[in-house]
Length: 231
Image (cartoon, rainbow, N blue to C red):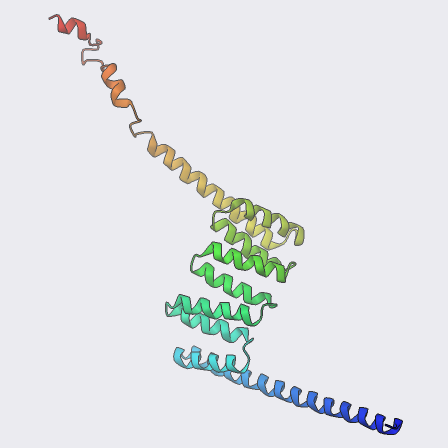
C-alpha cells in the first residue's frame, strides 16, 4: 500500500471515530434531557400527593439512567413512607451495585438502614463507603453514630479520633462529642436507677439470716430462745 493510500485510510478511521463520538454525545444529551423531564414530573406528582404518579416517573428516570441517585432515593422514600421498608432498602442496595464508586449511594443505604434501626448493618455499609471516600467527613460522622447506637463504643471513639484528625474543630466533630457525652450520661443515670431499685430488694440468704438472728421484741429486749423454752 502506498503512503498516500495509507494516510487516506488513517483519516477515514479517525473520521468514523469522530462521528461515533458525536453520536454518543447526542445520545447522552438526549438521555439527560429525558431524565430531567421525568424528575420534574415526579417532583410535581409528589408535591400534589400523587405518589403513584411520582413512583411511575421515578421508574422512568431510572430506566433512562440507572445511576440517577435522586430518582432512586425518591422511589425508596415513597416505599418507606408506605411502610415497605424492604423495598426501600432494595432500591438503595441496587444503587450501590449500579454505582459502587459513588459515595452518596452508601450514605443513602446507610440512612435507610438507620431509619429501620439496623445500626450494625448501616455501619458495615459505611465501612465500605469510607474506603471509596476516605476523606469524606460526613461518612465518618454517620459511621460514628452507627457504632455508638449499636453499642460498639470503642469503634465509635476510634472513628471520632480519625474524624478529629481529618476535620479538626468542625461542627460535626463537636456534635459527635456532645452526642457521645449524652450517651455516657444516660448510661450512668440508668445504672444509678438500677442500683437504687436494688436497695429495697432482699438479697440471697436474707431469710436464713433472719432465722438465725431473731428480731428484737417490742419491749426492746432481745428474745432469748433458751429462756423461753424453759418457761
